[in-house]
Amino acid sequence: MSETLSSENTLQGTFQQTLQASRSLALLREEKINEVLLELAKEAVANSASILKANSEDLERMDPQDPKYDRLKLTEERITSIAEDIRNVAALPCPLGKVMMEKTLENGLALKKVRVPLGVVGIIYESRPNVTFDVFSLCLKTGNALVLKGGSDAHASNTAILRVIHGVLRKFNLSTDIVTLLPANREATKEMLQAVGYIDIIIPRGSQGLINFVRENSRVPVIETGAGIVHTYFDASANLDKGKEIIVNAKTRRVSVCNALDCLLIHKSRISDLPAIAQGLAEKAVLIYADEPAYRELEKSYPAPLLEKAREEHFGIEFLSLKLSIKTVESLEQAIDHISLHSSKHSEAIIAEDEEAVDHFLKAVDAAAVYANSSTAFTDGAQFGLGAEIGISTQKLHARGPMALEELTSYKWIIRGEGQIRP
View 1 (cartoon, rainbow, N blue to C red):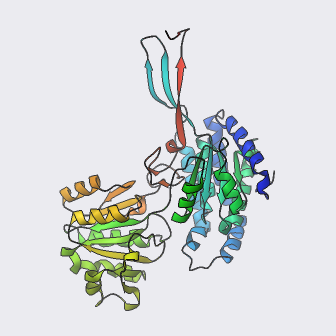
View 2 (spheres, rainbow, N blue to C red):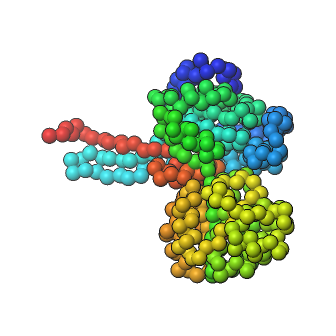
View 3 (cartoon, rainbow, N blue to C red):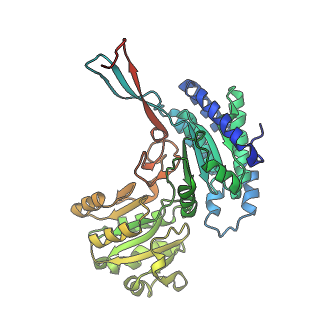
């Protein structure tokens, strides 16, 4: 079979083949899975030249000013990092077969609740070819087959990466049907969303528009991931030196990722500290949309081309670029109210020395990851010690936060008896 499919007319057959291949994965020994992953890490680096060549073709078609450009871009360093993440996944214990609960009933039936694969996982993603490596390693480790639907922006990169993955699978006499890349067209997306009975779960990774489309049109169960509208609240009790470093890192470390800071909330009593806080942002050429009190404080010191008055539409937006909104608040409660109104429930943070304020924030804010005195840039499966991740779930059913190995499993009950019948 070719690395990708050329016609949506073949998709039902493809889904059937992937489903069939998924049944053999549950029988693979963990040792063999780890061998495959370690070989893939090696081959990813060895084939970096061909992957980067394909990636350059994708990059040529995208405006460098597009926020998705950095997400699309691969480098030698990034491929090396991806390979290390794959090795990390290989080193982690496999959750399959883990006994979650065990007991014997009065009638002698022995019950076990054990972790099992989800089955066939579908991933729809935009402009992030690293996802192809990440989700394959996680799905293989958890015994899941994989249907990939990447965007047209990254199709050459994804195809090159899948060619490497299929090459490794053939070395180990494993079916290449366990991971399939669909055509980069909307028809394939629509057919994937209707693949009831073939795909067990679909996980969209990308813009809020993509996530909304998948949620509204899929007949297959969906886990929402990706969109991050991220806030950091600078409390009345905040340490200035600590806060400056946190805010600059959260905003500028990598602007195109979902854990990047979008809105700084600052207590009115600390507004005079704003020029000092913003100094590092100016050095990184961050465009600030400031509310009236913040604007008045910054207009004397912040570069004029990088300072604008905030409008309502500048709050509750994921910028994915060197842009930041600033909102002045009267209290901790007002900060929490603002977050509640605008958050995507991804990552939120407080900078404060007052332990009561910290505890209140951590309990009251509803998000998958809530931080005290730390950059939100740490919301990441590898940073959490989970290996790679399949995405950051912002919902509450099944999984929340970084979706790593355990989040890619379900469970089943195993019951052993000796002839018991129910009266």
